[in-house]
Image (cartoon, rainbow, N blue to C red):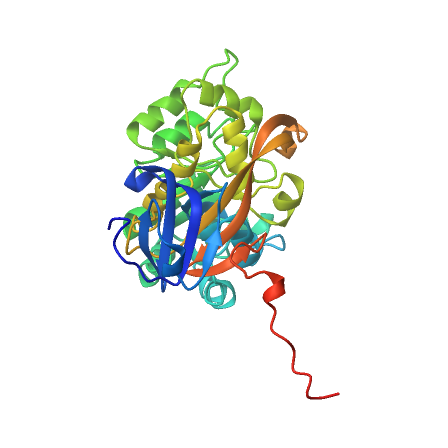
Length: 395
């Protein structure tokens, strides 16, 4: 569609800089929304073509952000999807193993169904999910068959398996998660610290192409060796197709790991937050802040957006998400790249170390299926002087 083609739309985001890696767009563009769909992305769409116009001048307009690792079930720190997503430009999230096959239906009814945010899930290999440390060590509750059966029953929401926090000497959790993935035709996300009997190189050898190692820049899962170089088994795993996810969280992102990795060309496949109450308060582990940290250590804005939109969409098995293509769901993030002096904080295991930066991504607006779900500065609203008079017929 050209800029001269008449457009009638419900919402027009005007004056922004669009970054849409799927369509190769990186420049000034307007975005028109009709109903729940993207109607047009053109250089100059007339304001009178829209019922509602939002001036997003000075901002970047991207597909709605997709958080591949967040938590809205399974612990007291889990958050309702909308409160941890929509104010930060996130329109789609993946709950990373909060529920298992025993309680997924409870999670779906309590959190997924009422949410405006689009929510997918990984089933924990532990049937009870993340129900506390004792539960997560319960090998007898790691049922590959029941997990696969529940995934196949709810394939519309459940996209894979999560295994995390296991401290035992063996591989029961990983092996059963991989078995469930084979049975259900899905993939596994692993959060696993090394012990003498289960080393990281052995773990990565077990993972298949498409499986995800999360917390890839965690201080306690060191990707950087004593020689200052990315360890060879990480590169070998990537060459085989293993995916590496950020999952920044409260304890799982270290500048000391991330900066040399980026400088050596080892970029994460996907950017995610591991958001829960504690991480939101301690490291401000939102998508825009995590993206900002990666900008500060050398990634380009285009690479950061790509790994926050279409890359996680493809990992979810939903490549129809993560773009501003005409006809796609109108999920949109509007981000301002503010300049100044900012302190960015990494994880608690490093002692919450700070890196100074001169840029920070600030979420300004979130559109979910054509509806403005968050608008920090009221860009989509009329001026207050247009307030209609109240009904003064009653004293």
